[in-house]
Amino acid sequence: MSNVAIFSGANLPVTAVAESLKKLEQAAPLAMVFLKMDKTGHWVFGADQTEVEAGTLWAVNPLSFTHGFIAWGKGEVLAEHMAPITEPLPEVGAPPPGSQKGWEQQFGLCLKALTGEDTGMEARFATASVGGKRSVQALGSAIAAQVAKDATKPVPVVELKVDSYQHKLYGKVQTPEFHIVKWISMEGDEDVQKLDAPATEEPRRRQRRTA
Image 1 (cartoon, rainbow, N blue to C red):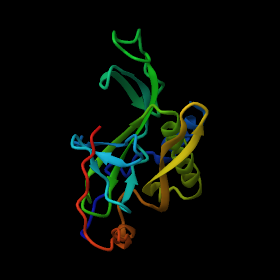
Image 2 (image 1 turned 45 degrees about the horizontal axis):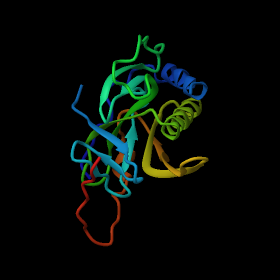
Image 3 (image 1 turned 180 degrees about the vertical axis):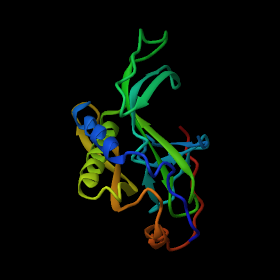
């Protein structure tokens, strides 16, 4: 595969960021596509809801974690206030008119595709769901532990998976999962060249899913 620059800001204080990431456990530039897991349990991105290629690997930028609040109307975002995890939660006033649940706490992060058809694509993931926030909390805690062990490789390379839990009212609820497969440096060293693209038995057209 061709050379892929991972993240800018390699000289930023990753150790300090890792300390801030620990707060997630206690809490409940370039154009990017929006990445999410839809209600059917499929990872999709962009306005066309293109399904993520199975088995692709993504690098999570440890400097990109954010927290804040979002207010949803009927299928649309009415307002969103986010801040880096190194800063306090942003202050918000009364929820905007028409909001369905008022202000909901939200966590976010940014990723870059390292393998597959979308190599090099950058994406933003944000979630206000219980399961989604737990997945971001777990990832943040893993990064903090990794930095304490080896600060030279703070970037988790993950495969986007699906987990689930049983809800009293709604039954089985599917949730996003970031499955860590290895750790690499911020610069995108030779380890990236050793990553394998997903193996498929035969090419298939990826689906576009309705929101």
